[in-house]
Image: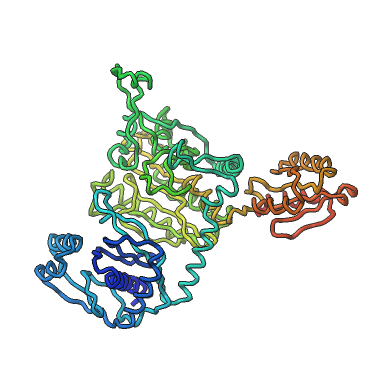
Length: 597
């Protein structure tokens, strides 16, 4: 048995153990389902007596008492009648049994010790494989039965589980570190952004330092795109309903879009219940691609014009349930670092490879290990073709081509059925942060459908109209998510080139202020992002404040510096250079900026 499957079986077995402990302590509880999940397991219960996190130590203690008495997990085939009799007082289990019957599946129980549960299997070979110190119950949460808001709210108990205590301890330590790096926490502490209920859920407000961080990243993005042969375009935030019907988003992407806006009348007219004379329906854009297509169609194109590479940092809006919103990583309005490449069939392979190289360059520039990048080739589900636009020939060509370039570029990739966009297959890129966590970032999508839906053509070398292909790609994914990732990756301590504030000037007292102001002005003249702390705080307090803000450098100015026309340069990690010329300090910072340190 492979290691991954072994630990998944252990985790599933632990969900049974948890259920056994809960029923032992709370006999009136009704158990529902309990699967293995990444890093652990959970079980959902319908308690008559509410519990909370404070009850978990008691439940965990009981699991370890029961574990000593367990041995094999015995499979028992049962009839419909036997199953319903066993769970006659549990409506949740009865519902699951009915589903098994409808699907024509066998009904099986699994038993260990005195505990029996409805289960399809996937257990540890023996309860002895479960080490008592390798798992821990870690939290409770609310969960609707079968994930539907129409059903009853249950209590979910989560547990962590690994093969050894060492792995468990390492994971818990990593989680503690993750809490310290949480971009929502650091975003507030570093005064970068906040969410405001008055403005709306999932709509971040960027403070001056956060907006400056965004600007630094955006300027880098624009510079590199212009160097890589892209042209810039811009598009509006809303588009006519007809546009989205033509693109297919109206039918295929409607679960992620907001309802139409009626723009045939003013708000005042709507408030006065006046009838609309001419109805006009517009939608907030969930993507930029239809607009770029309309730019293409504005005038005829020749094969000599292709490829066209058009890039835009365009804000889009997608429907998210309020309970699924999470800081910058799950928002309702976000800015895609979007681009579309329209090219001939003979140019597709080269353009795909160019994008892959660009993606890896971006990751390396921001301090990520490109050797740890994982790629997922998202393909159409052949059993549900009605979810996708286009015919078999187009899908076969685009999927085969993406697979080929992934192999040729030696990407670490695996294939996932059913994950393609409705208009074509794609490559999704995931990077690993400083804690080893994966983050979804770049996407490269191969599209043969939208060019057909919008009847895009170019005049080929024979003077005949020909259909181009279209590549959709985003390198960051979105600015919001990428900045959230950067905050957590660097724990808010950005490298000098990225940091909103690169250096703070700290005069020791008021008599050093004039010289400190001169230094501050020279730093700005050299296009360094500097601040001057002219507060009445002690030097120690000023230094602590600067380090709490995770500024890379400080220049300290006292009697010696004023007398010698010098500075003392100190980094946030405590290293420094005393009594050096300001020009030397500036040169050091500029070198680090150039080298992306």
